[in-house]
Image (tube, rainbow, N blue to C red; front, side, top):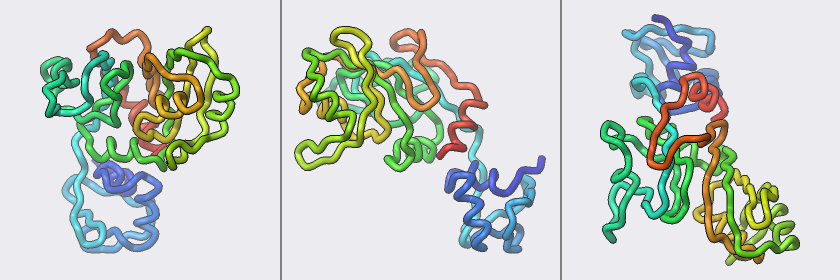
Length: 232
């Protein structure tokens, strides 16, 4: 089966589709020893594709899952303090998956899991600007502070990008961020006079938690994965 060269490179995990086209245009790609300078080129499984003199190959099928992380679990493979991790909760058959980003010990909700380490890295780069949306239950509402958060703030010398904040109820906010700094919602809202007492992620990019039960996992459709990869 023939595959367009840019897709082949993208599937290898070393570059996005646009990045692959740039590599091709600048003469970094060869097929069977011949430099390729146009993305309108197709390869087959037995062709030798090289980027900067190194042979590449396609990954197996990239899979992506939505997992509903319970409270009081660590997003790590092993915790030195012996606390329960997500891998203690994941059903058998899914424990080899990699997590995409982290949710802290007390934060619940949507955690994406994949078999593709390169995809996991690309999705968590600040430059990817993938929106993550949370429901934040706070102990106090300070409207002036929330306005500051929507404009971007600096806390302890760290600059945080503007947040999108919508009131859901008296003390529940829908907060959307696109940078992914560690504990940013808790840090920013506390600094703005709205300390978080409960945090729950409901979406990551185009993927929503929906009605997935706590501790359960759901496979994401391939068309959604393909669309997501194209944005990176």
